[in-house]
Amino acid sequence: MKRPIVLVLLALVALSGWCSIPPQEKDGQLDHASLQTIRIYAYRDWQSTGILVHEGEVLNIEAEGTWLYTPGEYNGPEGHRRYSAPSFYPLPSVPGGALIGRIGEEGQPRYVGKDTRWQAEHGGLLYLRIDDDILSDNEGAVMVEIEVDPARAGQEPVRRQGDDDAPVQTRISPGN
Image (cartoon, rainbow, N blue to C red; front, side, top):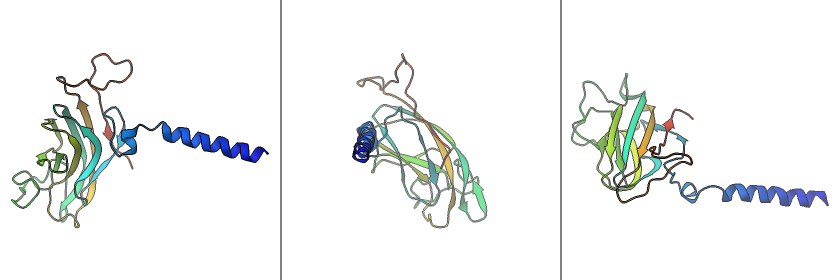
C-alpha cells in the first residue's frame, strides 16, 4: 500500500517541477533576468544565445578566451591582428576570426569583438559566431558575458523583485 502512495507523490513532485519552469524557457527563449552559461565555439555556425532581444534594448557584450582561426595561431574574440576578413566571410572588412553577432535569423552581422555596446534596431534571438567561412578546421571557444538594458520608451522593462530602476542583467559566463 505504501508503494503506490510514494509513486504518486514522486509523480506530483516531478509535475510541479515542470510546471514551475517559465514558458519562455521551455521554448528555448530565456528571460533577460535568467542566468545561463555559454561558450561560443569556433567550429560552429551561428549559435543562439537563447536571449530574446526587443527593439530598443541595449546589449553590453564582453568576451574572453581564445580560438584557432588560422593554423597554428590562436587569437581572441577581437580577431586576428594581421588578417582582415575577405568579402566572402559573414562580415567582411573586420579582423578575421573575430566574434560577430546578429539579432534574428536574417539580421545583419555586426562586429562584437572583445566588447561592444549595441542598441537593437529590431527584435529577435541573439546569435553569435566566429567570422570565418570554413569552420571545420577551427577549434576552441570564447566565453561571453551579456548585459541587457531594457528599452525605456514604449515598453515596461522586466525587473527583479526589489529593484527600483536598475537595468535587468543577463550574465553569460564561462562554464560547461
